Length: 212
Image 1 (cartoon, rainbow, N blue to C red):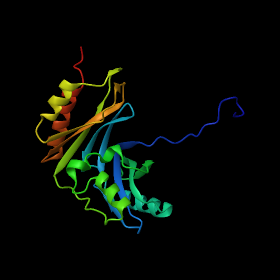
Image 2 (image 1 turned 90 degrees about the vertical axis):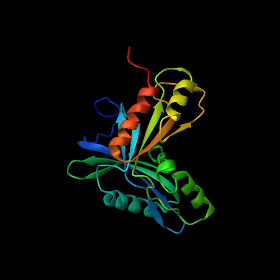
Image 3 (image 1 turned 90 degrees about the horizontal axis):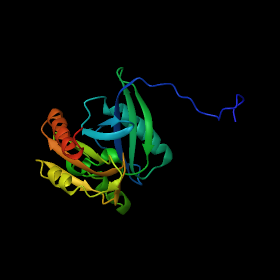
């Protein structure tokens, strides 16, 4: 206990960030690293609702430099997700490191030449790292979050989302929905980031109940 009777704590200064960004990195046993395009993660109530590829904010080079330093120091092998705060002055602050395939990289399935999942398999099998470049101009991934405690079926919503143009639905098969629980995601590809955001709006309108 602290001297004033309160539990010990770590206090951090508030970061006046303008956006939250994410970077997926892949490193093999030979120390070769490839990066996926920087993504913009859009949060609500500390839960990621959308991921836009590529990010309209920030520059990839500083994020890649931070990731390279960490992964080389750890001799990391595999796929890793890194999250950053981006400030208006261009400064990046590392917020989180997830040493695995990451939710912010789910859009790579449709948007990139080699998805983060295929990349993880290639690394495990000792194959050369795959191309991480975008193969579409823009893509948005919408996390399908639970808003109630109930059996997780939502067949009508799933069918409606899957019927949207240029949209792929991924359902996780969890038996029960809970508020904030990730039940699946949908990724839509588009010609511009603005069009991608519009498709994201349509996905969310189909998924979430209308306010009464």
